[in-house]
Image (cartoon, rainbow, N blue to C red; front, side, top):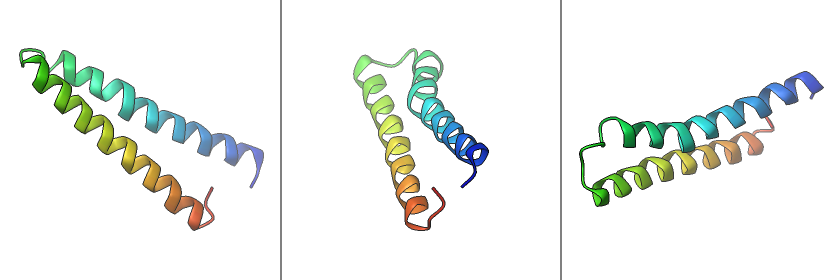
Length: 69
């Protein structure tokens, strides 16, 4: 794998996890869930965060098995 390709893959992984585990839950708390109770906010954020974290880890594992990364 060339250096440029490795950097692009690494950057893509970084962007995915940054958006889905930091930006998206924060946006949900400030937007659609702003008026909800604290328990609803916490549960919704935990579900969104956990889903995308798990999906990202599974995608990384599958990419590793196929030799893409």
